[in-house]
Each structure stands twice: as C-alpha cells, then as structure tokens.
Image (tube, rainbow, N blue to C red):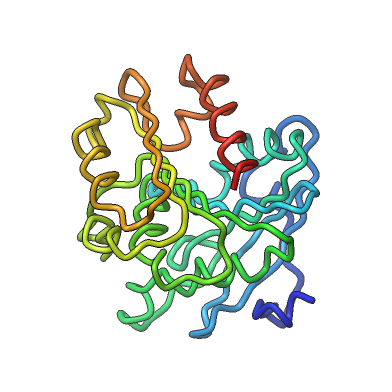
Length: 238
C-alpha cells in the first residue's frame, strides 16, 4: 500500500532503533524506525508511532536535535489515537548529507516522502520553527495532506533557503498558525502577517503569551494543555 502511495523504502541495512540517537522514548512509547528514499535519491531516517486513521507528519526544528525533539509530542498523540511520522531532514544525521548543493537546499522532497509514507486516511503536516517554515514554503506543491500546522515557523530563513511569507499566498489547504506573542523568531506581528497573506480560505491563528518557540509551546508552556486541546480539535474538525 505504501508503495502505491509513492513512498520509497530504502534498501540496505536495517534502520537503527530510535534509542541509539534519542535515548529511551518517554512514557513507554513504542517507536518503529525505517529508511525512506526521497524522489531525488536522498535517504531519510524516519520514526513512526501510534495507531489510527489520522497521521501527523512532524517536521523538526533546526539545531541538531532532529526528530528526537518530537518524541514527547509523539507520545501525547499516540495517547489520542493519532499515528505520527517523524523524520530527520537531509543534512541532519543519520539522514543523508547530500554532496550536491542543489539537493542540500531542497527540503520539499523530504516532506513529500514522509507524507507518502503515512498510509492513513487523513494526513496533516506539522512543522516546528524551521520545519514550520519548510511546511509553508513547500506546502503549495505538496500533495496528500489535509492541512498544515505551523508552530512558530519563521517568515523566511535565508540560510535554509526557506521563504514562507513568499509562498503562503499559494496555499489552498487549511492552515493553523501557532505562535507566542513575544517570540523573537515569530512574534504576534509576524504571525498576523503570515495569517493575512495566507491563500487558504481556512486559516486560523492561535497566539500564546510569552516567548515560547516551536515544540516548547507543546512541551513546557504553561498553557500547553489548552493549546493541545485546540490543536486536537482543529485536526478532528478537518
């Protein structure tokens, strides 16, 4: 079924367990790993957890932590009957580090490969910080998603060749933007600007107090329980 959806499973040695890179998953979370191959030939390290007919594909922040930073989120979503697919972008070990500069700059195939591997009735893309900026930058060209959740994804990240503000107007799928009012990377003003230029007729903006950024809003922010309830309700409604 996955092959029919366009997912390409990389040949070669089995993928190492997530504990090799991330330590023991929280809350007894059961995590399976595999290698995916993008359409331009890059091998991605991928982790999946949870069961259900809805998948959240999780695109990670920058900073070297990679998919490990999603494990608490994966545990929470598994408890709510949601399947998750997290992956390390190209350039983040143990995923491939392309020698070609052109390949290194294009994160779109990574997102599509993870989406294609979801294998469920409903698929949403959720990105944190850089991952959120990538989701909006490449979102207009992605297929097979029911919506995008952007957690503090910046308007543009020139060093990562991401320009969310320039591509947001081309979006047509539902978009949920979550930001903290005083986040130095995506404050209330920038989040409002992104919301206003969105080409999706179904765009929602949630603003939290403070400076919490990316997945910290889900993991440690004082209002995380209320935020989780809003995100889960949004996913269920779409």
